[in-house]
Amino acid sequence: AQSVTQLGSHVSVSEGALVLLRCNYSSSVPPYLFWYVQYPNQGLQLLLKYTSAATLVKGINGFEAEFKKSETSFHLTKPSAHMSDAAEYFCAVSSGGSNYKLTFGKGTLLTVNP
Amino acid sequence: DADVTQTPRNRITKTGKRIMLECSQTKGHDRMYWYRQDPGLGLRLIYYSFDVKDINKGEISDGYSVSRQAQAKFSLSLESAIPNQTALYFCATSDSGETNEKLFFGSGTQLSVL
Image 1 (tube, chains in turn purple, cyan):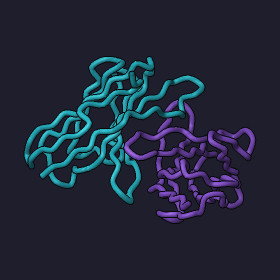
Image 2 (image 1 turned 60 degrees about the vertical axis):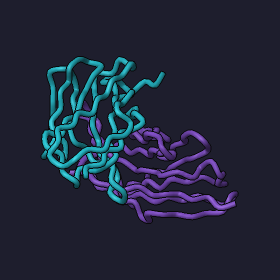
Image 3 (image 1 turned 135 degrees about the vertical axis):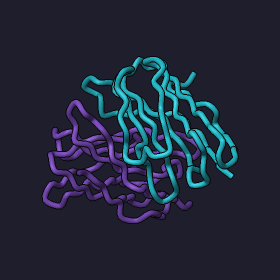
Image 4 (image 1 turned 180 degrees about the vertical axis):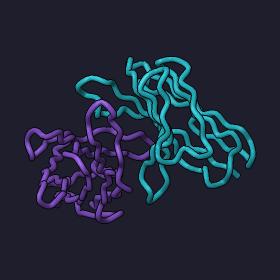
């Protein structure tokens, strides 16, 4: 079985501040890990993914995430928040392979204050 | 035009009614999925299909059925809608190649069951 836990359902930061969204995973096999973003009134879009290559993964819009096996974590960061980053962020895990299926976390709503 | 199109965008119905949500895609992907999103619960998988002749239950399939009419079309039915099926429903697609873990989402259907 696989699962993800996102710590904090709501994170609020000031524009220009560091963004840190936390995700811990559980998987019985080496996981594939993802961050998706959902802007208001839209579907989800892939931000970045980890698939057993480099542990530090860079995504779109200046976001990156680091896979830490010892901590079973895949936290999402951005050095400087922008107003346009306000959205809901979902961490997800899959076991990869031919029977691919994603399991999503409950989401973290990011608010960026001017 | 959107690559993954869901119709309708919004639907209000009454308890006991039969409802069909439709999804079509122009991405040429063989895999299609239906998720529901509830506030604070993230996305949960209802059904998924890896090709036209393959239908699989997700984690919350009770009360739902699906039909994969063609590679490009995947519809979700609620045979007898109930209020706790009020949610935002998303269709998604992926291919079976190297990028099979990347999901492409439609814009969602907001369903309200009164």
